[in-house]
Length: 295
Image (cartoon, rainbow, N blue to C red; front, side, top):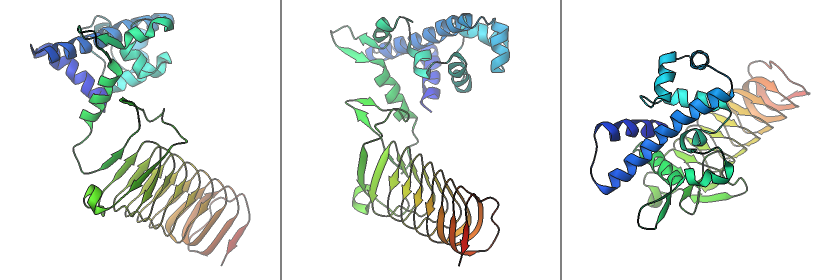
């Protein structure tokens, strides 16, 4: 979401100039980003031996749009920025912020002197716009920092477990809050809404759904569980999808697992990479690599 804020503010700062010192710094920053995008599109397009027409065809845009990007007459939308970074094999940060291809000088593309001998990191500003783009809701978001630098979702410390307690004193109505976590977290208490974690999550009961990049260990889940690794939980109201084994109570809908499945009553097992042990199977088993035990 922060990309939309950056693109919006590039145009805003140009069309509606603010004469304050802070606005001048912001405007210079946004103008630099526009210049970087223009120069980098031209540079990497030529490295791939692509014409403007050929690049436009790959991106699903017009050749006039590519020409305007390279001439700093407009900027790509968010989908095009993502597509450009993937096509060029570079990160979005590199597309937006890099001024020099020489890695020894790359720091100069990020750092800036404010005129008073103080330096700031332009990546910090990207982080600020990330926050500005977040909805002003009641969701609880748990992020990681190194100093003042925001750690992105693909760069967090996987061996760090964030301890967190959910109660009415700390966040208000813990019965309805949604929780979003970058990294691993061990939460004491129940969560009434959804839980989203970039890595593993351990918690109490969850009123709605759980989604994690790694394993899930929790109590009862009102709706669904989706995990990149194993799932250990209580009863699940709807479905369970796991990259590894599943050990749970009753499941209202289906189970998909990369390894063994051990559960109570389940409706359907769509895929199992190992053995199945369940109390009652109401539907069918569509695929199982191991032995099935029911009852």
